[in-house]
Image (spheres, rainbow, N blue to C red):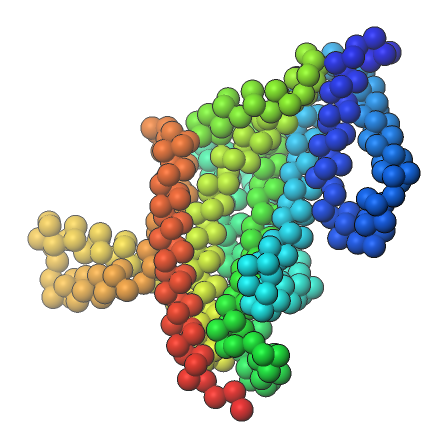
Length: 413
């Protein structure tokens, strides 16, 4: 009963409950908009809501008082942080389409329809479930890397997040846009009136938002996989300087939001989760740069080409985008050592051609930042990630502009 004589525990419990309730408001409104509006306008209902928050806060205080002496209190803080993170993701999934409609009502309406269609497709959940299963399997697979299994698993986790979103995005954009054009339903949509530009951009943004959702869901599971792996296999040497730096800088900020010694220990675990999320978000952002470019290419090609041809071309462009820089490096090395011949010159020319024309997908690889002996500074790496992501935005805009030009010449009748 320590919480009865410790006001800081009660305050900490009420604040922790309040944070959860605030994060739950957007999706509570989405579940029952009419009931939510009536509750907000009714003083009696608001009073009951406040009492509920206080009641939940007292339950948190009892829990903190009971677990305050436990060595696992920081683990409970991580669980709390992961639940709060999940709630904020749901808020983002609900609010992002609404924000897009405010910016561009017509394109936003098309994007919202494509976004909802993506969520409803069994393919979305099958790919996500397969990615989660692979991530869980990566925890227990031995990699035989002499203590670097954690780094290998982390790289595989980022690749799973990227490839799952790429697979869904390319398939969804190829099928959705091609089917609407071939099935003449695009004519009906554009008679609202919605222009071809708004139709294509809306479709692209809607599918891209579904890809963002898949990336963030898999990223949440990746956080847990990277927490569980060292506990499962204690032989691994776990040392991630960027995650450590993020935790050291962010955890004290999170602890300021919760008073009391026990509350701060609990908040330390929450700060650990937030720091891991921030550090891993840069790897997810790098991978999503590839997703954005390939979905834009698939959307542009879908205005002229059937589904199968579109998917094959995107697959070829994906491999060429990764292989072209490697081919250029290998052929340059052979020329420097005098081993190159006529064939090497031709391969080098083709490699340089593809390296110049195609987006440099090799820059979106997270492995050089993970598998290295010299640690990277988190914020210096963040600036690099943002510059590379800016490059991805430029290539995406070019692909969409090409798609708009192709779509203008397409006969829909």
